[in-house]
Image (tube, rainbow, N blue to C red; front, top):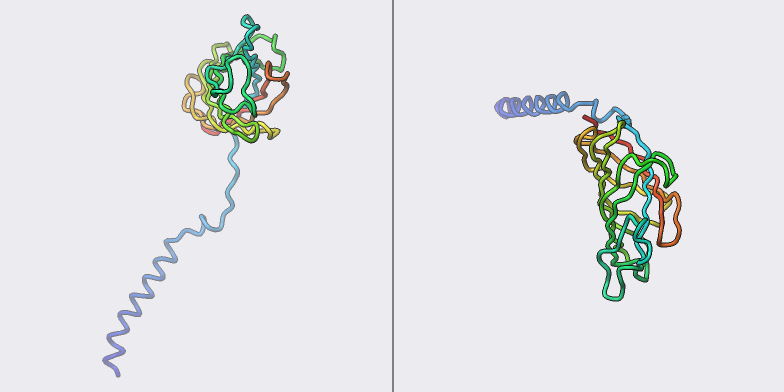
Length: 194
């Protein structure tokens, strides 16, 4: 019986040592601490104003339909729900909601109406700044479910003052006039600033 105890004693000691090593190397700080919400390193608010070309408003249009489904045309939104329309834009960005305020930059990109049963779009665009306050670009991409009051779109990069920026842009429709004009309020929170 003594021989059996001598052969199992080193095994039991080894097992106890492994358990002690595992319990001491596992950090309690990762399991026991609460994560703090990250605070943005920069917060900005802008408005951009989109005026769709409808065949007669060439001089003040800032957006145009460049692709439409077979049943649509390029001077009116497709029915139902604008599905299949691809719109490119070069819209003024202002600090307030007045279209006639001095622009601080341009919003340039596209939106694609991609849902058949509700109003929804996919956005890909950049804010181009060249003012005394900001120089550079901020780039955005993401889904825009238009039926929601606010929508979050990813800030996926930038240049100049916004080099390698990452964050969230909360977009809300501030005003609209049918298919011709809409104004978006864009609340930007950057969480990576260089």
